[in-house]
Length: 87
Image 1 (cartoon, helix red, strand yellow):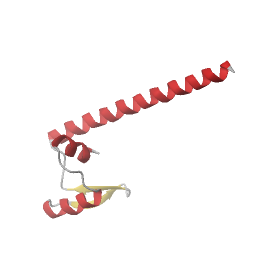
Image 2 (cartoon, one colour):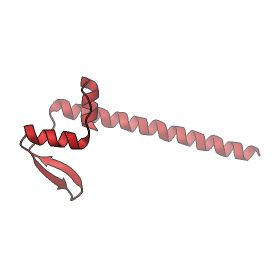
Image 3 (cartoon, helix red, strand yellow):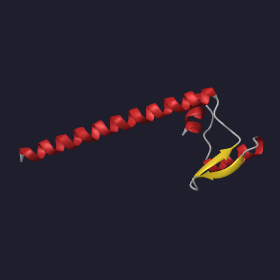
Image 4 (tube, helix red, strand yellow):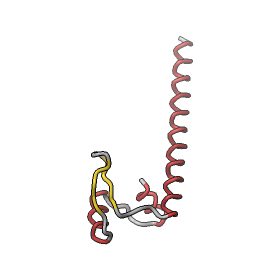
């Protein structure tokens, strides 16, 4: 998610996850591992301050978007219930 947001903001092409993984290990000394046995992660790399700020902003935008969808679904459900009561 943060990679895509970074690319959009800086007008870079977005590549597939496998492509990104193959390239990053060529340029950065990282260790590939699975966090909790499930989540693909790297050791030896971390977000910069700019990256952390971008991640916070993207998380807030996603939360706002989810809240808007929840509001829309709730209002549609309410409208549907109101329509049923009219019959």
